[in-house]
Amino acid sequence: MTDQTLPASREPVNEYEREPVPERAWLGFRSFVGQYAGEHTAGTELMIGPLFIASGVSAIDIVAGLIVGNLLAVLSWVFLTAPIATRARLTLYYQLEKICGRRLATGYNLANGVMFCFLAGAMVTVNATAAGVWFDFRMPGLNDLYPNSVGWVLAVFVMGALMTIVAAYGYNFVARVANIAAPWMVLVFIGYGIVGLREIGIDSIDTMWTQAQTLIWKGGDPLPGQVKFTIWHVLFFAWFCNMAMHIGMADLSVFRYARKSWYAVASASGMYLGHFIAWLAASILYALQLHRDPTNTSVLPGPLAYNACGIAGLICVIMAGWTTANPTIYRAGLAFQAIVPSSSRYRVTLFTGAVATLAGMFPAIAMKLLGFVALYGLILMPMGAVVFVDFWLSGKLGFRRNYAEATGTRFNWAAGLTWGLTLAACVAIVAMGRLQIYFVGLPGWFVAATLYVVLSRLLQRKEGR
Amino acid sequence: MRAFARLVSWLALAGTILPPLLFFADRMDLDQAKLWMLVATVAWFAATPVWMDRGRE
Image 1: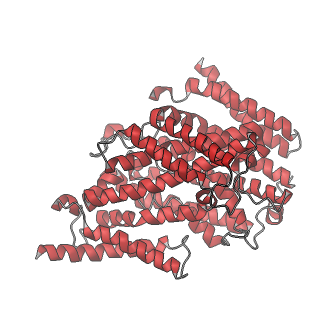
Image 2: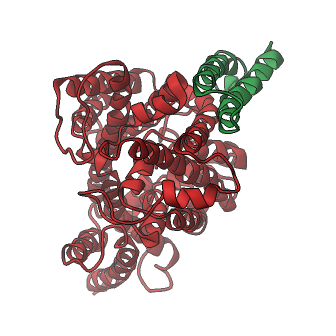
Image 3: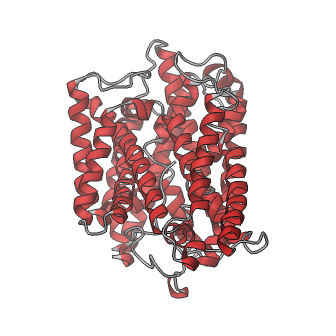
């Protein structure tokens, strides 16, 4: 689960920002395999895996839910995002500007930037848990929402400051480190799982599945303060945790470089290495911790990784958090900079990193990461529906495509109302207890698509008179 | 030089995943596995930058 970047080690979203990507810059399939594999094996995977265990998930639910949910995520990239990306070859921001107008696109940037800040904050939190292995300070527990020790605050501050300075002044260096570290990181994640299996008492592949059901993913009640997860929760979480990227269309910015739209199949590398193997491995480590001491419910990736794979494991936690926080902080900065274009990129990135560091001091985001990730996707999803409908259906359903560009408006009310009303409807459905936040994105997409069609027709008919 | 570095990288990847597998098979104790993983990590980060991603700089 992470954010989008451009292939290889380029700085994100600084090329062909306001023009289609020319053919000479198109990229091959392999570029996307490596990119997705690296980016979805992030530090936050070490939070998500344990949180599944804390949610009382059973073995069949987690395995089947992740296989199907990740497949749906890949299909969403293949059939929703990439076909538009390889036809228009524009960034999401520019496409939104054409449809929604500059002012509304700025609102989207603001929402996106804020969510990126919090996500980067969770990555800083993960890295700070690594510091806890070497320095003896009190670290947050599973249900802690606020910082609970001076040592914790200092650890987050130091980690966040380092990440921020590097994101501002050495983006390309970290991007290169990320590319280099990716294959090694994937293997260390697999190593976590293998060591965890043996340590918990599984010593044979023949009995692995039976023992996994009784020792690791036992099902039953969740830990206090956690939501019970069924197969449907796992499936929808795996599908929607990157909702902002596929259904929300943020990865238009990535696949605009793809020679063919089917290259989006490459997202499977990230889903099945990061969101399957890495989540399972991290959950095994947490199950081992609970197996040894049922009262120790803290989800602390640093100690979990260190106990399994020693210093190499700890380096992997730091590397995974650092290399994914880097583009996240950078990208949040770009989103904010689009709002205040006169501001220096470095200053904005430093400001963004400071906000992310502050957010990282509050363990609530990391400890409630399952809910936060679902919220993140939900907030950005309606604009993905707007882009989809505008691109494919506008002509057939009788309203103008790229309305803001065609009319010169700075705020397309049909798109703005679609965003606001869809979110209001989703929040109401969740608040009334009809659906949990993990599921509401699905009906929400149809609400957004329908609203945009109806509102666009109404608005444009009114103006045509 | 690049070919040698590439070879070291492949060995380092093997050295990252083999120790956990040997630990699982009861052929290595955990402390040894952790040590070999660290050695492989150092080897990976020393050798890989020599050949990977150079063309993009």
